Amino acid sequence: HSSDKVSKLEAQVEAYKKKLEDLGDLRRQVKLLEEKNTSYMQNTVTLEEDLRKANAARGQLETYKRQ
Image (cartoon, rainbow, N blue to C red):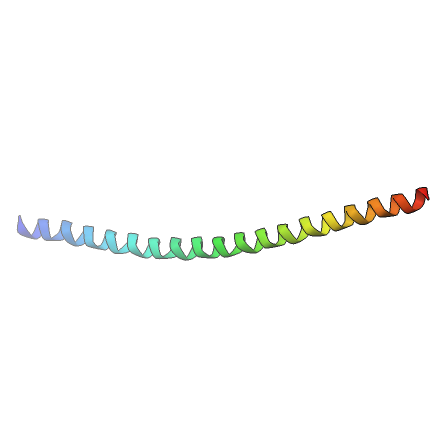
């Protein structure tokens, strides 16, 4: 009976070790995704600024054309 219990407990310990390893991998993946997200957000802000500048320049160009 004791050896069965020990075997079950050892199996549980191994399962928990595997879950801990998986958790570490998931944390690394989350960190990478957060870094990518930050990069994409910065790129979006830059593109939005460029678009705003381009629209302003387009407006000026239209004004010059009318004159």
